[in-house]
Amino acid sequence: RAAGAQVRAPTALRVMAAATEIDPAPNPFIERDSNGRPWVQQRARPRRNRQSETVRRMVRENTVTPADFIYPLFIHMADTNVAIPSMPGCERHSLKSMVAEAKEAYAVGVKAFVLFPKVDDALKSNRGEEAYNPTGIVPTAVRMLKAALPDSIVFTDVALDPYSSMGHDGIVEDGKILNDETIEQLCKQALCQARAGCDFVAPSDMMDGRVGAIRDSLDAHGFKNVGILAYTAKYASAFYGPFRDALDSHPGFGDKKTYQQDPANGREALIELRLDEAEGADMVMVKPGMPYLDVIRRLKDNTDLPVAAYHVSGEYCMLKAAAERGWLDERKAVLEALTCFKRAGADVILTYYAKQAAVWLAEDHAQQ
Figure 1 (cartoon, rainbow, N blue to C red):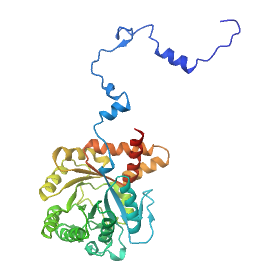
Figure 2 (figure 1 turned 135 degrees about the vertical axis):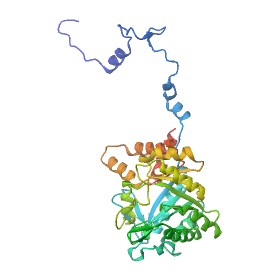
Figure 3 (figure 1 turned 30 degrees about the vertical axis):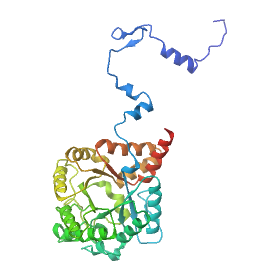
Figure 4 (figure 1 turned 120 degrees about the vertical axis):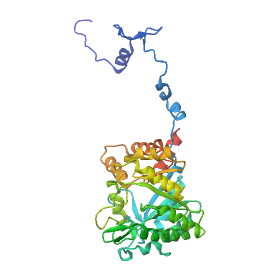
């Protein structure tokens, strides 16, 4: 180089070229191919099936579609919607708004809905009689939804907690939740919802024997085609807080550990599975979802029934909070989470992201 010539910084192109040059001092433990490049004698190379998006799509084991989703909708009898602070993007819908929201979701491929009511305190009681009021909020909402979207699939929650003055899923006596007395009420509730036109009832109460009793009650009254989505493995989880905010259904005392499952137990879910199968469940569900992927897999490996997973409010709000702070890419994280449910064995996913995820999936499909 001439004296005084300026030394140029290496360009990106020169750096890249240097990086691809063959090492002049090859590693004696790595062989060379006929071109003199490093060669690890590995015949099976899984990366071949990952080398382009086209190949990755071809060999993809699990795919999420809007048909997999059930969209939970919170409803109340007020004329206006109310935001749920702990669940950004979710609202308690008026019944008119519920129909509009369902129509928007239906238009992007989400055709199944489950209804959760916020019941006025004045209508609550220990025995939850409002749960089977034929002119109550849920039967009214079912009729409206089926009239607006006849081909939609409407699921209804069967449990007393939204209607209970005690905030529990069953009748309370001397501080204990009564099992069989509660089931008698649940059968009335399920029949009321069936008469309104629901397609599936979804008992979430976790009383022993309620699936069989509801099945028998539905059949005896001519509702043989109304299905049962059983909350088979519903855990006494800390991830339900925002949902209870939405419905104002926090337990009035204690907790729900005497009827919901212990989060430490996995095998116990198989006991519940065998019972629900024998009692006539048409689908079985695990709740919560992401923290219980192992339980989803246990159920999938031990039943021929469709398995559902509930992507619960606590999981939803964690994703929302992280996305709002810029800590996660919301779109990528949500679609990955939903794919994880499918990989674990879920056939059906209840998620508050149903409508938004369907839009994202459609956008991804359009770009392919």
